[in-house]
Image (tube, rainbow, N blue to C red; front, side):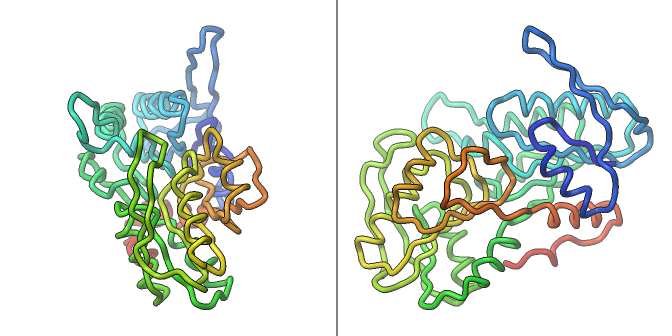
Length: 305
């Protein structure tokens, strides 16, 4: 049985359509002081329950998912599987300076304390976050939908680029699959969400550049990288990322940048329209994973990389 939180219903409906099953009836009651409660309007006793909810800001989405898990546990569900296409707080995966929290570990602890038996997610900011969980984690990759789209463009002289050194492993897997060169951007930050300097490591002259990242938040890094590559003689610059956070001035930055096309998945809903943004659906990929989990089949052959 598949149920959806408020914020990710658009994706849960597509997942259910792919599975050929109805979306379960879940009622979320909101109170005037901002609190809310969840209620399953049908019996889930002894059933495998899949709860679809991305935990993007604000934190109500995470709290709603926790209440859904708790209610399912108290309603005697056989298994509780959290389907979290976008796992929020994932950028806080380590102590990178003194006296900071590790938000990704805290969220993992909250989900396990609430009662999940499994997590199904996509493109975590850092792969090691899987180790924060003491339950099975099925980690999917957006490359399964993004790479076929990039191939359909039939571009010549492609170069894959990473907007920072930290994303070089992800970009390298794309470059290997497409059989093309890899270039890197070396950046320094003045503060969070603000890039101070950036240099290109590699040749982009007369190349069709595709910048690969896991998420785009304020779009400062990725648009700066695109502009620098265009100035360095790139024939065209496209960008792709798994998660469309696109907060603050992101839409204006992408619209005014050298990026010709910004490709995302629909792990996060996108309402502030930008002409350059294209979203690809991951519903079929999650539906197939759910089907294989229920049937106890391997999911690894879904991976292109």
